[in-house]
Every structure is written in C-alpha cells, then in structure tokens.
Length: 504
Ligand SMILES: NC(=O)C1=CN([C@@H]2O[C@H](COP(=O)(O)OP(=O)(O)OC[C@H]3O[C@@H](n4cnc5c(N)ncnc54)[C@H](O)[C@@H]3O)[C@@H](O)[C@H]2O)C=CC1
Ligand code: BAL
Image 1 (cartoon, rainbow, N blue to C red):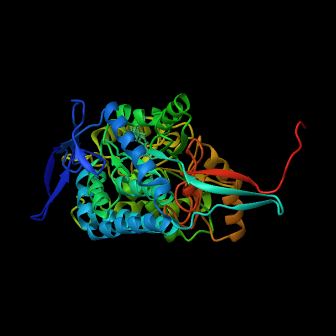
Image 2 (cartoon, rainbow, N blue to C red):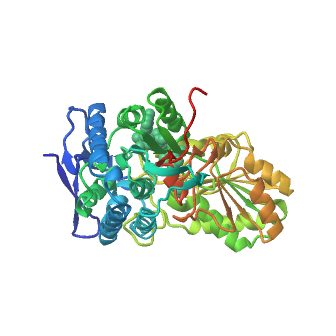
Image 3 (cartoon, rainbow, N blue to C red):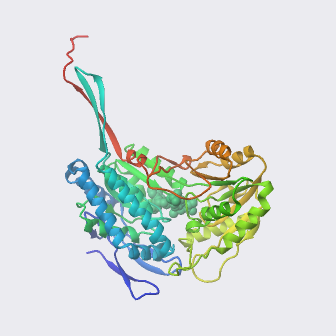
C-alpha cells in the first residue's frame, strides 16, 4: 500500500488528500526499488509539503508494460471512438466537479493563484479534454482510387501505441491535458512523467482517471527525476512515442535518447525568447496591457513569454512609461489571496536562476526601470522587472529567463524591428501591435515563429495548433494537428481484380 498525505488548505479548514505512490494499472503502488522519495515544496513559503514516491528505471519498465498490455487488450483498437469520447468527457466532468480542489493543490505546489489555476489553467484543460473527446469518433482514414475495376488503397489512422509524456512544472495540469487528451482520443496508452517539482496534481488527476472508468494501464503516472524516469522513458524500447515539454537543453537529450534507442516518434515543445513589436500606430493602452500580460502572466514562467519588447522610437517614451505603470499594478503574492494576479516562481533553483539573470542585466549595463529588488520575506518572490538600454549581446536579451523580466529596446524602421525580432535561435511565438493592416500582414509573414499574435498576446485556443520553429520545438500540440502526433497511418493496398504475368 502506497502512502496518502493530507495537505491543509490555507485560509480554510479543509484538507486535500493526495495518494503519493506511483499510479500503475489504476492502483497507487510503491516503487520496486528503494530510491529516495521526491520532496515537494510550497514555493510561497519554502516549506516542504510532503514526499512522493520516485519511480526508478525498473518502475518505468513496469509502467510501460502496463501501458502495452492495455494497448493490446483493452484500449488501442479494442475500443470504439464513441467509447473513448465518452470516457474523456467523463474525465472532463470530474475535473469540473473538482476544479476548486485541483486549483488549491496547484496553488500549494506551483504557487500560481487559485483563481488563475481554476479559471484559466483548469478551465482550459477541461475544454481541451472536451475538444479531443469530440475528435475521438471522427478520426477518419481515406479510400484512395487506384483503378476502379481492380484496386483500391485504404488508409487507417492507427494509434501509434504506448506514449511517454514528460511535462514541466509551469502548467502542471494544463500540460497534462494537452498531452493526455489527443493521445487518448486516437487510442494511445500513456506513461506520464510529471515534473518532480510539481507532481501533486498529476497524482490527483490519476484518481479521477480511475473514477472515470478508464481500463487499468491506459494512463499511468510516474513521478520521477528527469535524469531517471524521464530519460528511461525517452530511451525505452517499449515506448512508441515521446512527447516532451521543457527546456531546449533537455529536449535535445530526449531526441538523442529516442534516436539512440528505437527511433520512437518525438514531439518537443521547448523554450523561447519571444519578441513583441509595438509600432507607432498601435493603441498604446491596449498594447501596453497585452505586453504586460505577455511577460507577467504566470510570473513569466511561460514558454511563450514575450520577454523582448521593441518599440518604435517615436512612441517609445510614452509607451514605456505606460507599460511601467501597468507592470507595477500587478499583485504578485499569496495565491490564496483573491487579489493576487501572480505567484512566486516555482522553486529555489528557478529563483536563483531568475535572480542571476537580473544581476547579470545590471552588471552588463542595462537600466532597471521597474522592480529588480529582492523581497526579504520567505518564498520565491520575483516582482515584475523591466530593463531598458539593452544591447543584443546581453544575457537577458539572448537567453530564456522564465521569470517576470522584460528587456525593452527601440527601433526606427519596420525592417529593423523584424531583424531584431528574428535575431534569436528560438522561434516559438512573437507579437506585434499595429493598426496598419498591411503592416500586420507583412510583419506577421516575416516573423520566424510558430505562433504570431496581432494586437494581443499569450492567448491560445484548444482548436488552434501550437508549436515552435527553429530550436523551439518539433511538432504541434492542440487543434487537429496534435492528433497527427499520436497517429501512425497504415496504407492498405487492396487488389480485387488485377492479375499479373510471371516472370516479368
Ligand atoms: N518550454 C517550457 O514550457 C518550459 C521551459 N523550461 C525552461 O527550462 C529551464 C530549466 O527548467 P527545468 O525544470 O530544469 O526544465 P527541464 O526541461 O529539465 O524539465 C522539464 C521536464 O523534463 C524532465 N527531464 C529533465 N531531464 C530529463 C532527461 N534527461 N530526460 C528526459 N526528461 C528529463 C523533467 O523531469 C521535467 O519533467 C527553465 O528555466 C526554462 O527556461 C522549463 C519548464 C517548461
Ligand atoms: N503557455 C504555453 C504552454 C507553456 O508555457 O508550456
């Protein structure tokens, strides 16, 4: 019997019960190896919340075997699209029922405010499950005419098989939904490795998976260190596909492990250093709102964070003053306080990392116009920080920070803006603010990124594909495109009338 913890919810008398074992074959089980459990912290207080069982490489083998058995016997081609749809919808209903608890748990473990987790992350995740539930009975093959009298070819979009899914800590529930929903819709089975920093909501969701009625082994959850369980999944010969969200450095390792093992199918959603361009014709108030949202949402811990902002020189002073005032308005604070619009960064490691960038920005000569000062209270707090007077060679301009830290520069011509925006190894997202329609078309076409936002930023929809160019990723999530990542198309060539002479 694996362990259970009861976590107190601040500012209420309630407790959240979480099973902390590995979820394999619809049961919470201990590890077969006696490896050190994972310590889980509350980033708002720095206090340890609990420990959870850490999967070893042998546990990964067991979870993969469970997923394989389910794929062969109860899921995969053994279950209709209607039934997959029904179960995914049921899971969405259970998430809807439990969204307050899930949001409180996400807040405890990740730090993000309860209201943001509930109304955005979880609301969107429920929508994601329902969107793919809608697809489950509409995954169609083709019949391809070869010769009307003798031959036809038929394509079958088959589920690729057992999927290893490795997710990060910045959106623990939402990244879970983005991965799980399309995989289930097409009939794949799953071994999910949540981040070792934020495993609690994936474990809680596993309880809902069982309650929804998914057969054992369809979704297995194995908290583990990346270098142990993550690597073991990426390198596993029994895994047919690995889907990863996280840093570009780790994504490269995942691809290498896939290539060096069984050449499994790989999709990678990686980092970014996304630009936002503000042209002279932009609505300054609105552009400043979106720019602030772009860098401050989720305390900047967002792969699409608009962390480089370039403003046309003739509106620069006015725009920067407006943006600075707006950045100061956001309350970064206790996630159980309804006034908070952002929480702490997720861990001590991230705290040190973000502050090292802020210090490097100061040292390299950029000017801090907002924030840049540490708090003295416990918790991994980083307030909105805006740098101006930047140069392209500064670390804060070149590297992904993953915190609420914005670098602001200026441009004179449209081409200069495009060149600055594209001057990065990343290509995840970019934003532009302009009321000149021809300019919107020209610039969005020239920007090298998988997602372009015009007069908005950081809004995603479950029916619109999402993914990166350049070193920001491979493959697409969301929309119908995500289904392709979990499908292996089989072509059946059928001869019902052509005879051949032999030898040729
Ligand atoms: N694109 C995104 O959404 C994310 C980007 N990042 C970036 O990465 C930086 C570092 O954060 P980390 O937590 O270290 O990211 P990471 O990329 O190492 O972690 C993401 C996931 O990968 C797993 N992992 C780690 N090493 C692995 C390996 N060798 N094989 C397979 N899986 C492995 C982790 O356990 C976690 O589940 C952040 O500061 C940020 O810049 C981090 C999280 C999400
Ligand atoms: N906001 C898109 C998902 C991510 O940051 O990983």
